Length: 219
Image (cartoon, rainbow, N blue to C red; front, side, top):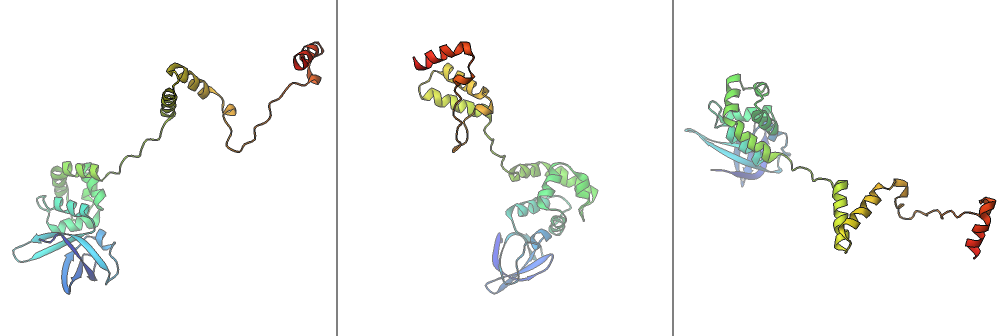
């Protein structure tokens, strides 16, 4: 049983290729999705292989990815779907879209694929819906990491202050006060020159306050 073939691409067409492995050419049937990814003749290629044994022949079906091969192998387990039809299906719909259609029970989408009638589409959904739903979960991208929120940042700051020896209620009060400050009172960016604080001038003081101001300023 062949599982993987690596060699030089000797010939290619829309539905099959010939792979030269040490001077021996292997005929490999492929879907269009694999054909579109093929390099130029003479370049090295690798195919994930499903070996189909018949009474009068051994046929090799090749795929670019192990996931596509697994989908093909699930398809040929459905009654009425052989390797050639399964290859045609994967030529008419991408593997991820096929998984979504089957797992979601999208009968209309499956019927639109050449070679798939309504009864065949119903059997595919009936027999593969659960398996493809599992594949869909496995193939879905990892969820994005959560961006820290303001509440999380406040909790981190509170924990840091407590670890430095501050009482928790005092640290929390200080953080609540700082978070309530308007942006204009926040620390300026590095390199920003702070304006000098304004001091009252004697000239602008009312006459009745000048004596007190002089006394407080000059003693």
